[in-house]
Image 1 (cartoon, helix red, strand yellow):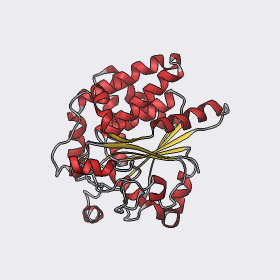
Image 2 (image 1 turned 90 degrees about the vertical axis):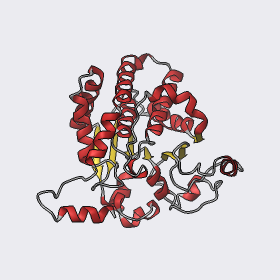
Image 3 (image 1 turned 120 degrees about the horizontal axis):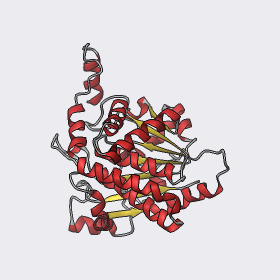
Image 4 (image 1 turned 60 degrees about the horizontal axis):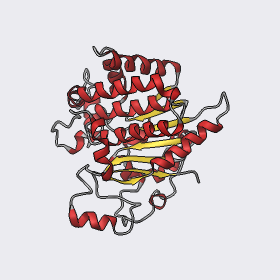
Length: 322
């Protein structure tokens, strides 16, 4: 459907680059300003002291930023029937209350991987983290904050972002969205928000942040076929030290959108897809979930029949080095 919409538009100059979902995405960003300001302020204040943090303090900040990125994934316009879904309150105040809703929590394994890279990295070598983006608006802000934290903490030295080539699932990020968000931040009246925009524009200019897209992300293939269907993309992902896959559709494509048993291991559900260590950061909005403890899924079904689709629950699901 989204490809058909795009095909109709590109055959209709002068609107051949028109994004029919732009107004909805922009509104999501503007309605989330309180959270954007709080998040950017926290990040800029953290950057001032980050070199003075001990390892445990840095790990706790990493976990906090990861959780913000997770719950930012609730802001998905493709599931709201066009209703406004924005983050109107400061999400950082809710992180402790939301922890019980994380069904699979592999944050410790992520920390172990990245902190080990940091400790063993040679002076001129690169640690690259790739982020396969989901929604624009507030969620994109949370992903950019995560990317900035990874650089500032030296857990990574380079970030590659992957977005969509066409308007997709209403709120998914395109190159225009990516650049527009950073420009909006740069011109903000709030000094910390503006500083984020300035810094992030500089990261793009210096190559520490790289935005990429590929037609594969909007094709109907699950990711286990990537090495055959898009070998260039698969080869690019193999150069990453860690890949974050944001959101529900990416999770469905990681797992083949099959009706797996809840206890099937995540690695088995990936069906051989493993270009690099990877982690799904996802709030549940579709009826597929693997890697749960025995009885965990059944217990949730008994108490909350719609637990798989409400976005109330989330996962950090990691598949480490082979």
